[in-house]
Length: 161
Image (tube, rainbow, N blue to C red; front, side, top):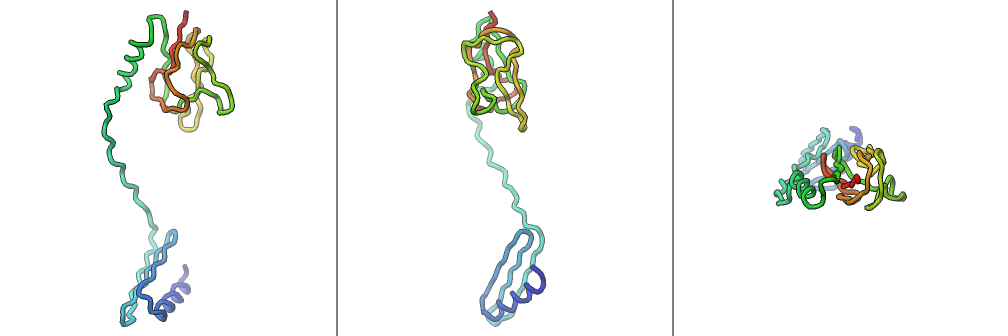
């Protein structure tokens, strides 16, 4: 608002008998208050208005096992001595397909060779292809599609024999 518009607004409020008018725009705020005897009080605040985000309340810790406990559970229950665990090299989102309209990279029971792409992990809008370190057969896929994964989290179990 320019000064002319503000003056016109003050005159209008004065004549109308309204007690208070507030106008807020992106970086501008004006409040015009009148008293019963038509004395005016004008407050103009042209400082930028910001909303300060409030910190989220702390989340109560759940009794979920930690990542290392999950890894040891997987190793103890599902992995025999000759099987290999392929782990996530980064934090991100796990995808089994290169895009939603394409088939999955691998399925349980499928034979893979060293260097074959097993999945992609998205981190900061970059899609990182995760390749097999060994040749063998996919025994188990440990992560659901489009799930978040942590660094060193087990993704696949491969039987190299």
